[in-house]
Length: 157
Length: 446
Image 1 (cartoon, each protein chain N blue to C red):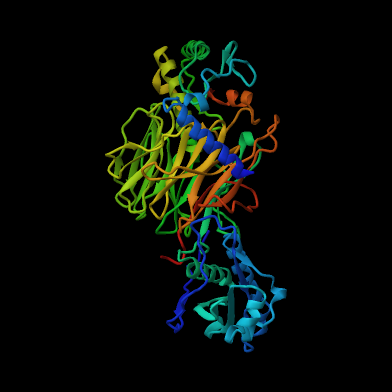
Image 2: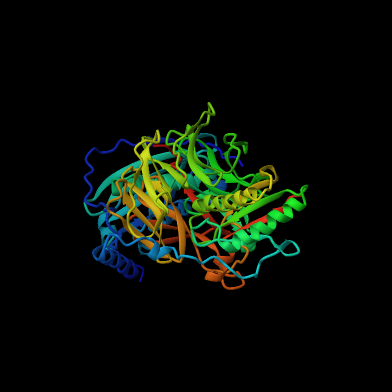
């Protein structure tokens, strides 16, 4: 059974090489924009200020929905200047543990830089990556993975 | 958490110099035809006291040897009840025709006798039934409670004599024990013998711990901990329980491993969205930065001679495997297949790099040569990663996760091993779920 599968894979590999070595890896493993756009799992720092932003698979670029959310967070943080936050970066479970730690850090930093560019003082923001260690949704399906690729803004005081 | 360093004296018998084996095991291909092996009960010297006799070591030691050899997939152990000759005469002078009759090719016999001060002398002999010769004989002196290690060392000697390769049975695996719900798992460092026996927990589970790795030269382990919510690399002495923070970095350090001489720790440091690879000399605390690229560089692993490093990076846009010289120069991408490649780890033999591959939503454990050629996938599954080599470079241990249902149930991680040939995939039993395994070197040295 196993070896049948492996044979299939090596056959697929051979075919791919034959068809053209220029095929990008994107086709096989990384979908384009699959960031979560719903509201499940989302909590609020304050009325109308969502606590989290979502990312596409293996990406750390902020989507337009993410910048909207972070804009609201920046306004809220500027209105509450004594509040400090930690940005917790997360990845879905479909990646190696160590790479996901780095990816979570990169996602949290992307959010941090947006807050800073919108006037929040850098010394009020910390980043903390959990990689894939703390999923928000424990299921193993596409919806859960999209909800888990996130950066969550958590008040620390 | 204390390991006794057992002193075990090895005494080589006067070996009849001629011992040309007709039997041997080829471990370079998948072994579908394991070697028929008879492991006789050992016999007890009649002078042994009841306290020793009650331990039943005369059957426990051969049983453990048999478990080891069978699990390697290279040996087929014949049932004891088919044996004609009794343990004592078999050890002193086997009647080879009796053993050939039950179609074994190899015979293992042994004797346990008393040494001074409550110590035992455990002697074994390995016989080639086909050519009717003694292949090797060896005695170990040990305390009775140390019989498992002696059994592992006997297993290694048999494996070595018949395969021509070093064994791996006298070794340990460190891993992360997992309990609790998936959204908030409790993770603890645990260490056990390679056969899953004797699990000991090294941390309490108060903080998240990840990716422990053995030092090749000492009783140290390096791992990552979220102690005080600051994810950092630590160095732990598993004999004394003393642990130290590795370096003074203003951000997350992760993915640690030792250099082959045990003197440095290589790891990643993440800052401002960028992870690069650093080393720290354990004694001098001197830190050196090896990669300087705005991409994620992580999962570094040294070649066994220490002159090269393999790591994964997404500098091409996707996670791929690279090599570089140990000073950080000469960076070369070596993985070019479709899919993503991660967790490269250099074989202790130096020839191969094992890795995790993600391709069309499946995860593979595979190997390639250190120039990237000869990629071979050993096993496919829903999720698996983090291969670690047995000390002889013939077996890999890794962890595999099952998917969970919509309420998060059913997802769990277990340790598995597989031969380099892609055959002999086996679950390693652990009391809890388990991930991030790392194999030690041979405890009895080179």
